[in-house]
Image (cartoon, rainbow, N blue to C red; front, side, top):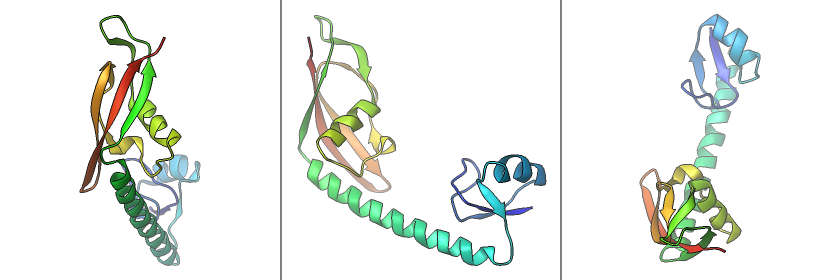
Length: 147
C-alpha cells in the first residue's frame, strides 16, 4: 500500500515522501496516528510541495547555523554546578544543559544533535564541538563550582 508521509517517521522516511508499506502497518500505525495518508494520484503534487518546503527550511536552518557558528567562535560560556573538593561534579553536564546555556545567551539555531560532546564530569574549561553536515565549529564551556 502506498502512503504519503505527513510527518517524519523514524526508519521509514521524511515528511512528503511516498512509501510502499504493508497494509496492516499503514492502517494500524501510520493512518491511526495521522502520520500518513493513502497516496492518491494527486498526492504526487502534494509530496512535491512538502519536499520544497522541507528543502527551504533546511537551507534556512543551515544559513542560521552558519551565522551562529561564526558568532560562537572563540566565546566562553560559564555553567555553575555542585562539585566535590577534588573538582568532580556530582551530576554531569549534559548536552541539554549546554544547549540551555546557549539559548539563555540568545544563540538560537543549535540543536542537541549538533553538539558533539560527552557529558562533562569535571570542573574547568571544556571545548565543545558543533557539527551539522559539513560545517563545524567550537566554543568553550567553563564549569565552575557552585555553592
